[in-house]
Picture 1 (cartoon, each protein chain N blue to C red):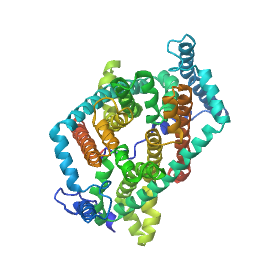
Picture 2 (picture 1 turned 30 degrees about the vertical axis):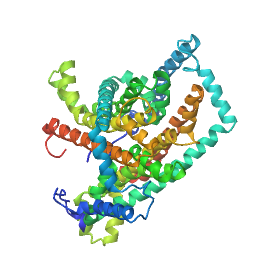
Picture 3 (picture 1 turned 180 degrees about the vertical axis):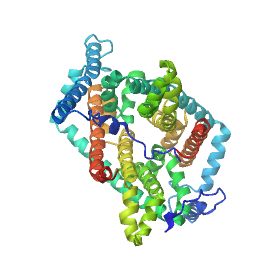
Length: 288
Length: 262
């Protein structure tokens, strides 16, 4: 069971939290030292990537590798600008984003529904959970060839596969989040004579929310992963297709530009959800 | 209220879980037997069993499976080894954390499969690219969880070690590693699953050459052999499940000193 990504912290929450300033200094000094620390952290994050960039530049300039295999950084930047200007990159990005959003919405809402059902009704769980596990165990990409046969390589294939990738972590974390609501919360609610509905809306769901949200974050990450995979294998548009296409023509500058965009979108999606999480779960800090 | 009760573990003999799969099988059988669907696309269950019997008998599938597992294991060992080292380094050294941490956290956002075309350009479509890709897929979860495990060592624990006069080495072996072990185990477990996913993905994408269960499936697709695809998928799922089960068992055994409940 613990196989699947259940409520695992991602390190960026840990790393991006500012280190706690020493408490006893007065406010101005504390603020200043926090600024200094943040600035230092920011500056120190640059030497390493810059060194890599320099190495890349030198490797390309002295042609350690042929330029078809390792294009110089400037060329990648120029290609990137070209692709943006010609509209090729924005168009493909848009298609990929649309797919991931549609698939994620479908998968996450299905996952939420199944997770809530299994979490609240033991009978539903007994019937559904073993089958759910079986489906979850086959990696999304394992389904690809079969789905390609059944629904072709059209838009439906991508949406189904992305939905499946988002569905599993959302359902699993919702289910477990509901199951793990501490009994004492429910005891307290009993003492207050909450109705069933109140219990659900005011105790159970809020208590399960952090883990449910975790599932949603994982769902989106998996959806993006699945999108790239499916576009690499079966698509004629989208970021993944740009990568395959560039690779086939040995235009590594196109490939690298697309890879950068794939990384950037993944980063932004994750950060967005982290921001929402901070807002959604703000009440927790007050109660702790 | 139903969720009040601590839910009991589902006993193995509970047959209710089998109802849905059986219903699905019956539906599948019924549809194909009555010719309600195109049986070229939706092949009857009997044909799948026959195909399984035949490919397993011919040894084609098992040879592919063996090749895949060897690749999977090689990548997993390389990737998780590097991941543990890197995670420890990040966790222990503030300098490493400041210098390499942000780059690491940024790079891990790049969807795994996007690396595959790049790797295959640089290293060809042979085993080198595949194994490096699998190693990469195992590296991230292990490095991340090792890092978090090491960071999870509390100040109080460090102070105790200080009071007891631990040397640097003792601190590493007797405090930091054991304290981080559960989290490292989680990372390894995840890595095992990701590595299997990556193995299949790499074989799909670079599959036309070389052996492997993924290549068998992809060739089945090219030949419009739906039976073979289903057999291959089932096998991929079974192997994934077995890896998962094995990892859980090892984890439970190695970490039993933690005792029940954290």
